[in-house]
Length: 71
Image (cartoon, rainbow, N blue to C red; front, top):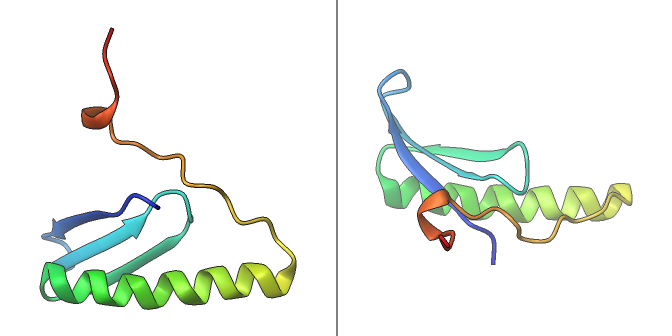
């Protein structure tokens, strides 16, 4: 499962959602829920375009620092 970031952008006046592993896969929404719904559509299009172009689909790798184990 790909990690999704959702954050508020003052500059854009709304929420941005992105999938770091699928660069540049991102979407905008007026609410976090709208941004996420738009991102799901963008992800589908991104993956289909990569398949049609014969490009590799990167595996989920991105993990924010907060989820990384410390030793």
